Length: 434
Image 1 (cartoon, helix red, strand yellow):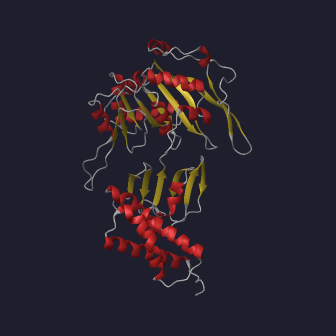
Image 2 (cartoon, helix red, strand yellow):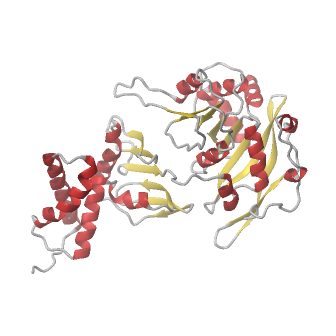
Image 3 (cartoon, rainbow, N blue to C red):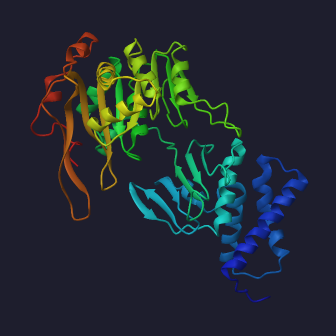
């Protein structure tokens, strides 16, 4: 028997490419249908390797076979990361720098691609089935994996250090409000309050930074919407997992290769008003659609929900002002603020803390206008008290002691909340102290 041969890194790259090319040719020549490709590759990869007349250690050979299999039928080196349920986000900053968010913490992975071309092949594998492309003239692309995970890819010349991939994994587990209480993201009293506000058809904005968990919270909060209502959801990339039966989902469409025929969030918000919605749920407002959303909220489409990028409730108001002005209407700032204050009832601030935990850090009432200023009143707030030696954030979620001005509207809708929900003092909920 031949002694195992030593191969350089470049030799291994060439070997994997040879095996992948040989198997691809065999798949095309024999016309193997998609459902049988996995079995075909497993049966024939050994034969393709034998044709090289190489002798390698068995563990190395198995590792090469696994990598080739993932390149052909999966997503290459990142396939194991996609399969890991503890990983929520994957960031490829070039072939040798792959980072993941695991249990809320950002860490560098040992995963690596062979070179820039290897990353580009995986990008093509992701986007080509969707009829999308990325190249020098169109160096960025958004896509979605079959499981719903959201993908963004950037290539040269925009990506200076090589092609980049960012994947926000789609959670297969549908979290409920009980899960958020268990995780310490909200208290039982906060959940009861939010449930009453949703059922009473209040217009709610979920505010938060990138990766703070806004979409997850929107999913949970939307779970309070009654089953007998027609819900229209509008998103850039479909991520929402609403539990109700009567849900009409819509997703934006990018422009074609000529830059035409795009369908935007704004187009879909306008169209949704002609679809007899009981509720409109927009995954995120980030442009002129904010004006259409506010006008819908102000003209009888109560109970709408959306998210916005902002670091606190006051910033959320400022962000909405900016987005409304992006609609191209020459509106005075005071008029914009009046639109916001009359349309929005509640802002829920979602935050990713420094220790990676995601938590609702404020539930704030939009209490009207005083002069030219939108008045905000915190009903619940997270107070940070310190940080442990191992970096864990300490603090408490508790009511501020202020009853919202809209309490009579809640009671008219049939939701009379007990005084204990708004009482200050020691935490009334065992999960609020973290």
